[in-house]
Amino acid sequence: MAIADPPGWDVVPCWTTIQTVGHGGSPYAEWIVALKAYSNRSAHAAGDHAPRIFWYPPLTIPLLRVLAFFPGWFLLPLYCFAVAAGLLLQLKAGFRMASQDERRWLIFLLPFAVFFPGLLSDDIILSGNVAYVLYGLVLAAAISGWERNKWLLFYLAVLLASIFKTPMLTLLAFPILVGKRQWAQACITGAIGSILFAMQPLLWPAQFHEFLELVRMQFDEGHDFGFGPSGLLGKLLWDLKKPYSPGITIAYLAWAVALGTLLLAISFRVRRNPDLREMWIPIALVGTLLMDPRITEYGIAPLTIPLLLIAWRVLRLAMDISAQWRAGGQPILTTSPLEMAALSSLKTGRPDLALLLAGLGWFVAINVIAGTGEAWRPTALAVLLLLFSLSLWTLHHASRPRNNPGRGALRE
Image 1 (spheres, rainbow, N blue to C red):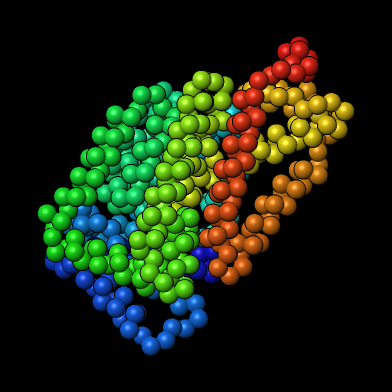
Image 2: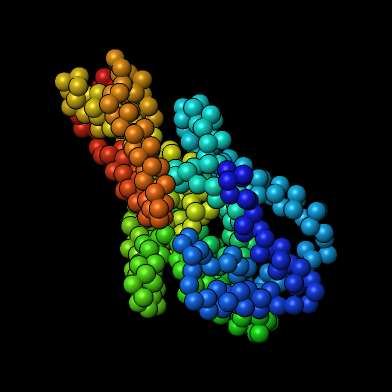
């Protein structure tokens, strides 16, 4: 992959900007010039795209000045180590979401998650985007949150991440969904993050103006809206040469409100049934990431293991129901993942190979579809929405009352 597509395409503009700031220049001026030059070209070759740019907020300027003191031969290996560590922390967090039975086979699949972000093959790990570091810190800090309801490190990690990517403040919904009494702390953290962003035009007025101009140009020329529902709408409007604002803002707010309301309603139901908590954590994380206003390839990399767990639990439930029907009985309604595992262990005969092959075939099919033309992003959104919807089905099935004749046999 590294040979076919030289790595570090997100690192190069960062290193160029570090050198520019070190010589006293603006971190945004040269990128505005580059985008204007791209826009003024009379024609673009097939597959041509806008140049990669540095478009992090001015709050990162002090860090750039510090980094400018160090040579590239020192910074590059250090940063590669940080990206690798961030990836490992993401995998660790996903592994901790699995049950003990699931961890027996999941340990062997962890390396493959590097090459299948969001379950779709992609080389985004080679980009070197800082999101791998930021999501690694956030998810590693979240482990003590969902296990012991200690969220301080998570809030600090989200604040740090918001300095580079302000939309990551939407991650503050996660402790509200899976923690206990986290509304006040999450709101305070969100307010601090908003203040940090709002103070930037006062501290760096010229640079902040250039930053906003660069963001506008990146959307106009690079049309990189992400692949969330509002992002795909923005891309569609751009392709139709229609104004994308304020349409995508309205679409995002409607989506976020609807999704947030649904997640809150489910979280209240989960709190009344602690047996559902293990199933709920990866679902809540997927729902939280779906509220990001700009979902990207590296933004769904942290969801690879949670999506794999959801897909496996959906398939396992389907196989359990199929086994019951093939045995001539009604499907047993379970209320916890532990009972689902127990039911699987009590089954006689082979599992439903047709369903198992169907699951594997679906995985191959989505990767074949995603590898054709511009289909990766819409396919990624379709996978996210499909697995999120199916995860709600498994959660609903597990929460149904056990009023059936199979309960006594299961208990025995």
